[in-house]
Amino acid sequence: GNVGAVSAVFFEKKKIQKIEGTIFSGATGQGGPLQDATVTIGTYSTQTDASGKYSFQIPEGSYDLTIQAPSHISFTLNDVDIATSSSTMIRDFNLVAVSDCTVNIDFESGASGWVNDEGASTCKTGTFVVGRPSKVTYRGVTTQVDGDHTTGNGKAFYTSPNSRTGTDDVDKGVCVATSEEYTIAVDSFVSIWYFYGEVVARNDVEDFFYLEMSTNKGASWIPFVHYNDETVNARLSEATTTVSAGTVSFRIRVSDGKNAGD
Image (cartoon, rainbow, N blue to C red; front, side):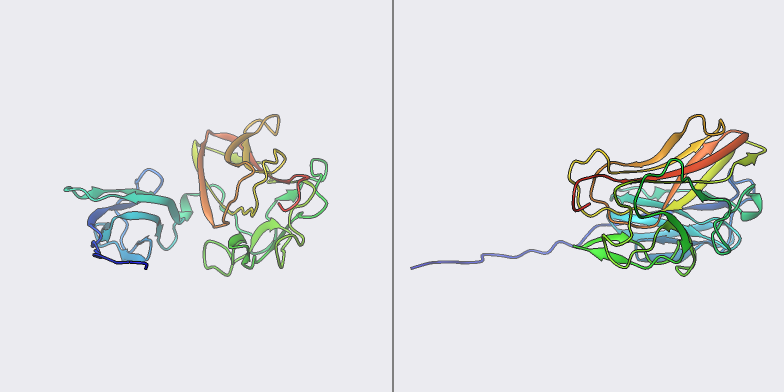
């Protein structure tokens, strides 16, 4: 006959790590410690005290870390590894004040100077529009997020809203959109929130996503976010870079190749 047995089952409690730090106001922290900033790590959340300090004791693991405060630009780090050690993990952050921003763009009242580049675009569907995205999931992969990164109910500038994967998303070519040209008086920090989703990767070199900037009136473009043909769960993410004083413009390119099922 058959014999089967379970000899023992063990559960090990996850180790706890202490993480603390200080949140400062301003790109370089010039505004001093920031009180009442909300710091969120995964499902854990706390607020900074009068000295701008926060503290957590959380299980080891990988978490998204978000910092928010009134009149400041929210900040997110994805996939922060919290590993246990005998010492406290120290992480300080600077949160940029809205009043410090040379340019502060949202899409609540329209496209804010962003346009579809009809001369460069070859896609059959998927031109960029202003609206509130609604979540779309197909085969367990999220291809379109719900809302924006601020209230969750705001608008975005994104490829034509699709009710399901394969309907009015980017198809049969590349969709290109560009911003207006901005004049920057001093060397600056750039923050742009975006999302991108792709269900099936089929080694199609014509499938890609680029978020780029140009400091020479579009003569050349520098990518600071790039995906090749790969399965990607869409989520609102913050892309950051720096730009020197002068002029700068931004471009998004999203392409779907000839292979079926993209």
